[in-house]
Length: 222
Ligand SMILES: C[S@@+](CC[C@H](N)C(=O)[O-])C[C@H]1O[C@@H](n2cnc3c(N)ncnc32)[C@H](O)[C@@H]1O
Image 1: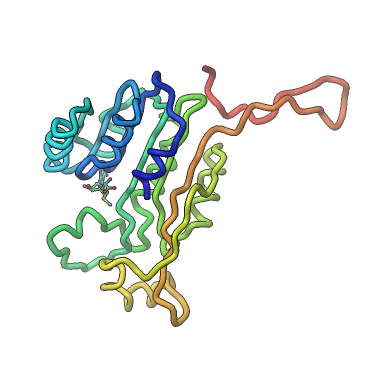
Image 2: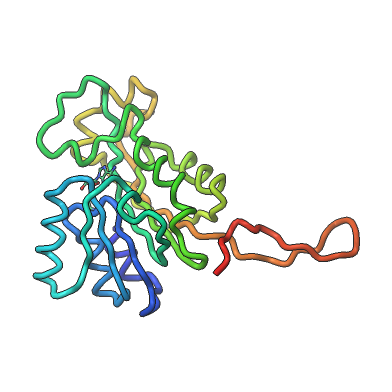
């Protein structure tokens, strides 16, 4: 879904793109093939960094693969496109993680990674930049939209697909129900791509007084 969203995104040839939680690098490579001027991929697991480099070579594109925790390896930098398919699997505290699950576990409610990303996003988005985040309805779509708005960004739902619970999610149904994350008889989730950008700066007429003032001033200066 995220790869498709990147393929459809309007991307200037001057755009600098960042793919967080890059895994094998499929999303980063899609941004590079789409013509971004530079693409940086970050993942906390070294194996991912190697996989991204290898896959970029195979696809004959340039991707800078960095190892580290979320925005830490790109501290101080802003990007025109930030893509993230973060881990979002709610995990019981005593979980015996199977091989591969660590890439998906995200705390007791599945929000441990996405909340940290949203908090740091405004500091890394270019003035006219856009973020695209993957989210499961099981971990709270409304909460993500509200947190993005609280962070001074304008969220939009770019795409949503309803279907049966993913394999890993389905393996934790009892836990999800006990945590109140899953309700009703239908074991379904919606997977969404959520967009976020700075609200356009609008000149707004003051309701009192004669002067005109600026609206949302959360966007950093260009
Ligand atoms: C759901 S996978 C997404 C992989 C890939 N982006 C994709 O769409 O197929 C989540 C990825 O996030 C990485 N990850 C987990 N915690 C992270 C963190 N704190 N900082 C950077 N990457 C992280 C995992 O290693 C894993 O590769």
